[in-house]
Amino acid sequence: MDANVILDIVRNEDFYSISHVAVANNAITNEDDEEPFDNNFQVPSTFTTMEETNMTTDSIWIVSQLVSKNDFTKELGKDSFKDKEELIRAIKIYSIKTHKQFVVIETRPTLWTIRCKLHSQSGCKWQVRAIKRNEYIGPHTCLNNNISQDHPNLDGNLIAQETKHLIKEQPSISIPTLKAEIVEKLGYIPSYKKVWTGKQKAIEQLFGNWEESYSVLPKFICVLQKFNPGTIVEWLVSRSTNVEPMEFRRVFWAFAPSIKGFVHCRTVISIDGIHLYGKYKGTMMIAMGVDGNNQNLPLAFAIVENESYDSWNWFLSFIKIHVVKEREGICLISDCHGGILKVVNQHGSPCLEPHAHIIVVYSIGIVYVILSTTFMINFVIHN
Image (cartoon, rainbow, N blue to C red):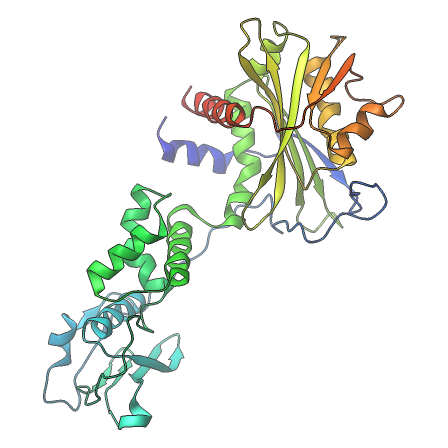
């Protein structure tokens, strides 16, 4: 199925048509079940809304020569630009290639004025005033003795524009590789931080930002359910009032083939948690089964705020309800996390109530989990 078709389906899906959404109070407890949920775990404020940004285009920006013996438009390569962004990019590249520097002295929606950075020290009168009719005073009369290997106008925005094609082909491309591309193309050596910033900007331009990704997550999960009947999803969100947008807390899901496959698996379930990294932290919980051929079968997944008694109890309870169901004598394999031990040892616990509990020292099956998760999601999307 074409990616654009999938995206259209995701955008048009009704979040409430399939998923079960539980609204929690704001006091999600920590591991000791005594203090409120840690506010350092950030959540996007517009979790369920899909917002389109209205893009506006400036009038054509034309560089006109006022006082100059040299034609700056020839130096720049062209005399008109479709928008302000294209004009700024062209002047940045011009400044880098001519080893000059500029500073912005005035900026408005319809006005952009720059001049030579060495104006005060050397009296250089180079200046560009960009509006619908733009002014240029030049050329540069300053010396370039103190230019470093880096260039102040070689910023993250320009690096993003110059490397976007590479990042689109290979999103995991390394910072040193991008840095080498800039050095070869523009002749300056930007700092690691600049290149990293440029890569993040390019990734956002190509693939969207963190907030947009979270806002499409509910509809994406609903599409997985729609095209894979029998898949179970449970949400936990929080909302202060009925008017305010919901905030994401947790999501649990189990694919239909996994639920059906567990019937033919051994009564052994391995569980583990993997830390997520990015703007919004969290933990991904995984439950794995083992079939008669000793092959791993991913059973269920969840994204939660952290590993705690409350989150493990929530995850294991849904495994019991949706995956294990009436089967008995389950052997649970896990590490020695306090939250898991508390859930298992709790009298009358609503979760698995295992026949046996094996504690291992090292994390279990993470490589298998990642590979199996990738395969399962690709299978659901393409079928």
